[in-house]
Every structure is written in C-alpha cells, then in structure tokens.
Image 1: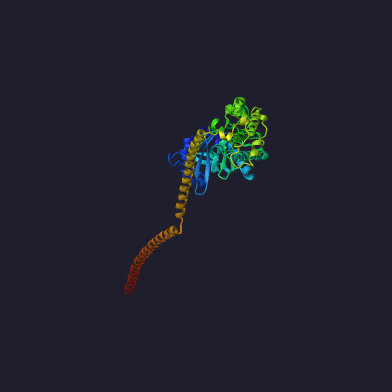
Image 2: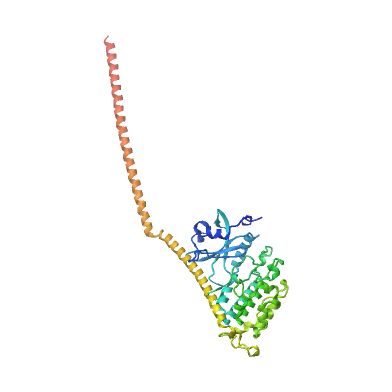
Length: 448
C-alpha cells in the first residue's frame, strides 16, 4: 500500500521550499525546528541550499544545534519505510562515520500541504573535494586522508553494509579530521534486502553500466567501484599535486570523470600516472586501471596500496626526494608558480564561500538564541510579579463589584420587607374593622 508521501503527484519546487522555510515557526511540525532560523547568505540574502537529484538540503539553526533539513522534490518508492528502518538500524549500531537522522512525516507545511522531511544534525566541515583542494601540495595530510577513507570503506564492508552513493559531496571531513558519511537514501543493509533503492549514484564515481541504469546493482559490494575511484584520486593528488590542476580537479568530482571511467585506456589522467617517474603512482595507476576495466559485478574489494607506505615516515612533502627516471627532479618540483597562483586563487574563492556559509549559520544560530532569550525573558520572575500584580488588581475589581452587588441586594431586600410589613398592617386593620362591625351587628339584633 502506498504511503501518503508516495501518493503526492506534484512536489514543491526548490524555490517553494526556500520561501516556506523562511518562517520556521509556521512551517515545521518539529518544535525544535519551529524555534530555529533558516540560514541565508548575509550579503545576497539568498537561502543556503544544496541540491541533488531527489532532494534539496537546507540549513536551519536553533539556539544550541544546527540541523540539515532534507526536503524532497521527487517521489521514491519505499522511501519512508526504508528511512525509518535505516534510522533504527544505524541508531542501534552507531559507527564513527554515522550521522544520526530522523524521517518525519509530516515534517513541513508548504502551500497548505504536509510533506515529509529528513532531519539530520549539521556536520561542520568540508566535503571531500573542498578538503583535497585545501590541502593540495601537503602530501602527508592527503596520504592520511586516503588511509582514513579506506578504513571507513572496510568498516562498511565488515558490517555487511554499502552506502550506495560514495562521492565527494557525501563525504564530510570535520575540523578534527574525522570522515562522516551523509545521505543514506541509497544505502544497502541485509535488513533492507527486500527494499532495493533505485539510486544510480554520481556518474563520475559509478560504473558506466550502473550510472546509465543498464545494470541494477544493489548489495553489499556496490561501493567497491566508487571506493577505488575515490581512493585512487586521493593517492594521485598526494603523489602528484599537479594532477589537481592538470586533470580538472574540482569540476563536480575529483580527478576522474565519467569519460575516463567509460574508456580507461584513453584517460589522460591514468596515462599520465602510468608514465610517472614515481613507483607508487605508477602502481596506483595500474591497480586503478585493472579495476576500471573489469565487469561491474566483478570489482574487487578495496585494498591498501603501496603509496600508503609513505605515510609513517612522512614529515614533509613526500615527493621531493622520490626516485625519478632520467635524472629528473621529484614530482613535487613540477609545481610551477602559475599552478601555485591558480591554486591560491581557487582556495581564496573557496575560503570566501566557506566563510559566507559559516557566517550565515552563525548568524542563524545567534538569531535563534536571541529568540530563545526573549521567550525565556517573558517567563522571568519579574514578569511573574507583574502578572501577579495584574491578577491582584483584577481580583480587587471583582471584590469591589461583589461588594456593590451585596449592597444592592440588601437594599432591595430591605425595601421589600418594609413593603410587606405595611401590607400586613393594612390587612390586620381591615380584619379588625370587619370583626368590630360584625360584633356591632350582633348587638343590634339582640337589642331588637
């Protein structure tokens, strides 16, 4: 039987959600979110939003906690039941990479309609692409990142789970270096075996047959292909920082694109790495090429590559003294001034964008905190004293009114009593006169 959300024929547009969420008190069902403030860019006043194929994510800050609110723009069969089961499953088996979430239906009111949302704690950090761009040229940090990513992938596999859409936007690196995975819409778990997701994943990370919809891949191994694409790209950036500039890093992906995945033998990036003077980079290219040329359902599990062995002894740029062919200098020396200038420019733009986002979230939290203080102030003892004085005044007025009513009633009763006594006296006098007259008549008859 279709759920309420599955029977929705027209979902709101992203702009409709953005307009409705500007008044959290009237659009959200959750009391926490009703007390929140929607984050907007301080300069442009535009709503901060990240959009995907099926949803848009908004930032709503309360006085104590920022949240990511996912609002849906398309229907997905079984979404509600899958989300609820996943929330229970992951909540009962928390992992270091997990971010708690809650599916709420109804969750938001848009255009008079009640719609579902996913409420998730906001994770402050950089997505994978932003983090790599920030640290290009710092080989030890990127080698450590590759290792931490591999450990997350191994942990997922050990649980028998798969994320389903591993890509740069769904991997957040926190300020203390932790990796967090977000967006669990396409996730696999044995408990969801009979409830497959129809998510295809990001085309720059998935096998071409899966990305095109030709092959439906749903199971514990469906992250293998994307994990190799990501792992190989991180290692390549660590071993050859120029790759980030040369092969289009930052363009909705890392280093490889869907065209590279469709034809690995013709990939400029893989060809460059395979001809590198650095043994570890050549080995990375060979392993990655072997994986990309296999059938989608025969992808091997991610394994540790030689490049990670450079990590323990890395105290500076790894590649400065790397052995090279033909007496050439280390790969790190190939970063010329123009590349450095472009990286600095790009980093400055990213920094400004990130600062604007952080500033918007902080502003929203300050606004939410101010609202909370105002509400708390309305309930302070001083306010209570004022209310008690007002109540005492009203009680006094009621008492005075009651006293006047008593006086009026007493006066009315007194007048009624006097009137009754006078009436009784008249009746008594009439009776006495009648008696006297009767006696006189009897005496007259006797005399006769």
